Length: 84
View: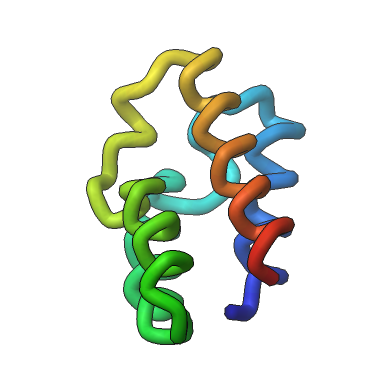
């Protein structure tokens, strides 16, 4: 799992106060693409299950309020910290 690009984008999103402006086209587009590229890298079913629970492929970030966006980013980074 190459999480460097993800970390960079999520750090920028934090700096921009969770306004969904860290990447052109919004964070949903980035997360969907990153999830598709990353999903196949997990060898353990338990890790894949936790990854899928993040629902990065659903494109729901833009529909969240600021506090929910912060929580979502914290969840993603916690997963990355645990499995990177």
